[in-house]
Image 1 (cartoon, helix red, strand yellow):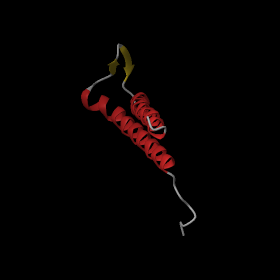
Image 2 (tube, one colour):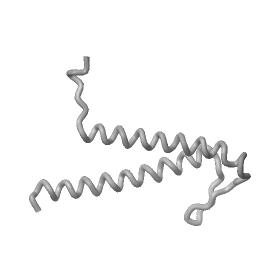
Image 3 (cartoon, helix red, strand yellow):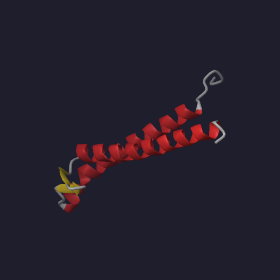
Length: 88
């Protein structure tokens, strides 16, 4: 049934990364929808930037933060793997 379909390592890691970003965005949206009602928090300050607490802003912040961390780690792994291939 699945004999002809193979998932390569990079494709699997990219898919897991995108799934993690989507899950973080969904959790951020859920948090943005419930946090103002439960705590009365209307605004959030991150690095001297004040943003309103809404599902959209917290979803975007979560996706951007996790995406940035994963992209940085992926770049480090990519650079280090090139040094390993050259025998340095």
